Length: 306
Image 1: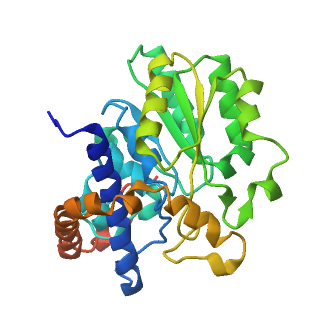
Image 2 (image 1 turned 90 degrees about the vertical axis):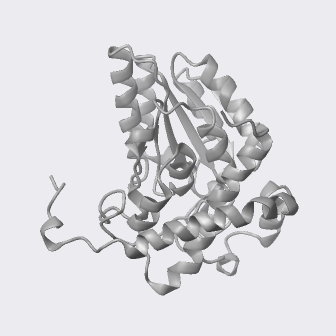
């Protein structure tokens, strides 16, 4: 049993995710990574706080911005890099890439590049858990843009009608690509769950993994039917890719600086240095595994294709 204090344990997990993605940034210009990437930098606290509460048998359905949840739920790091490299040692033999990560052996049921498409999958899993009398928490994570999709509302309605054990988690970073909430939504996300009779919790300190863990644990422990959690967070990098995008003019550098001033991974520099060497050694080993993994053979082209 890990007897590390919870704050340090969660800090290390969040730092590991950030350093993994910083390694992705350094590798990306080389073209070794064979797919677009949607980075979770700035949003790690949500993933580690939530996944620390979940058991291996609990199921989580993610989005294309799924690196943090894959790693926090226990996905294999070597297979992660091999998948991004398009190699046969990857999670899906190199075919899925960054946007379709999965690790069902630890309850990470997979990601989808289609906005909101993971939500009905989670509702279906919750229906199955209810009918099979399984002791499972079912969680689906999505961005604020997904609340504009019809299938989001259909899923909320179905979950409420059947009182399904599913927790809807909206990571609200304020933007869908370059469009802010005010330009896209005539509604308030906080008001949507009430329309379906679903309890709502808002976590304002989305940079604080301890706060996320504490508030999510309270929701998960009380949950027998559907729940909705909105986490206010901040995406540090561009929507897709590895660059900063403040020159695009759609968000202010001051907002970034405000989140940085509260980010434990930035503010606790000494603690980060304490863990950095061991984490970077693990990452280097995973990258070496990916580079040594063979390319998929031609006869694998149509395997697993339905």
